[in-house]
Length: 198
Ligand SMILES: [Zn+2]
Image (cartoon, rainbow, N blue to C red; front, top):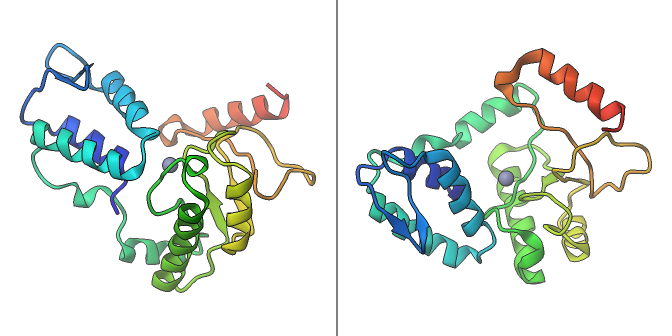
């Protein structure tokens, strides 16, 4: 399933039609820049149930009439297999990228288990790491953690910045994000900031 926020970005960037507004939100046009509008639209769509989000995305895409196809936005199975061959660890980021804590327990269970099985089956490699969609406190909860454990994940990553110690809970692993275009100096800066507790 293509990641909805990437499809949204693709539709906005490749639009052949300028649409003035959607659900009271101004859409990008020649005078309104893409990026902040995209961020606002994504924020609106993020917390919806996936069916209503899919509907909204379809409507937006129809109205913006983007050129081309969103199929090339993501790595395919073959690309993912080549990562496995290069000894990358593969983890799950769920099937639907829903905010898990707002989904019923049964849907969380199914999403976590199915995504893991599908990855293991296609890639013939153990999948033991999960990254929660959005990953901030409140985006996952105790139910999510227990579903992740019973689905067979050994660890789960949040998007909270920081280093991990022996006492860090296994299903609340912290990390820091580095923009690949920022280069090594930026990585050094982030590491220094993290270690000095800022
Ligand atoms: Zn994500």
